[in-house]
Amino acid sequence: MKEVVELTKELLLRPSVTPDDAGCQALIAERLRRAGFACESLRFGDVDNLWATHGSGGPVLVLLGHTDVVPPGPREAWASDPFVPEIRDGALYGRGAADMKGSVAAFVVALERFVATHPDHAGTVALLLTSDEEGDAIDGVRRVADAFRERGEKIDWCITGEPSSTAKLGDLLRVGRRGTLSATLTVRGVQGHVAYPEKARNPIHQAMPALAELAAQRWDEGYETFPPTSLQISNVHAGTGANNVIPGELQVLFNLRYNPNWRAERLERRCEEVLKAHGLDYAIRWQRGGEPFYTPEGPLRATAREVLARFAGAPPEESTGGGTSDARFIAPLGAQCVEIGPVNASIHKVDEQVAVADLEALPDLYQALIERLLTGPGAGPR
Image (cartoon, rainbow, N blue to C red; front, side, top):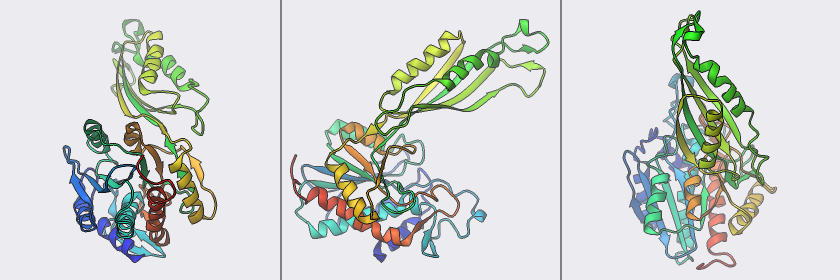
């Protein structure tokens, strides 16, 4: 399957550091048009999004991916140029090789082969790509989902190509993700001299009991395969740099990763109840990164489990761990979502890589999923 390796290389040559697509989607759209797909460019702000479809009606199966990558960091730290793909010792190196240009290339090859073999397949098969997954995730799939909602676009199943495998291709099936909620908290005090604390109000001292209570909070006991909800304080900043000045303000950054027991609005309310109970003079700015999603037992999960077991040689672990993905914007449209992709050991690191053998197997894996869902027993309009 050298075709997928060559396409991955073409994509890796394009330095598509988020939110720049650097021509990746145009290359893909040209190939898919030749294969009979209808391609629509959805550009919002500085972000490119590609919606390519083949067939009509339901069920609608979407392959979801992104063409943007994180910055490579110091190029001298890489063994080879991060934007010049190189194969060494059975692995393809380059920024985005695993996250996730390899999966995107495999999607394209699998789709080309599928429609060539099944030109009159049931339902609709589609590819949705964005250049805003690694960045702010504002004008990417989030905005596309809003547009789909407005025009009544329905999605039944979604397969995201995020690098989900841990040690071997297909050893993990992601069936959900936690929600993410971030906060910037500002606690206001009164600046003064440390020798005269009665003439000042120390926001650090005032905030510490409230922060300790939030950090120690047992939010829940978990949900299905989800771990308990967690709050982590990631940054605390105050002071003028002088050791004899009580600061007038404290800023705290914290994040909650939460399971389906919660929605962002309830968590915000609960956190602010704690802050108010401690009598803080504060302001807080919330950033909702996406609600949790969970795919229960059904056709998509069962099909994915069976196909992965065949490729990996054993049933996959079914997990809801990890960070976030763009599937969090597709799930609220009523879609069942899973994530299947290559080994994630090197993502976002120097010398990011994907095993060539895994890359060559990915189109077969994705094609098997598409065929089972759209041409297997029970396939057809729903």
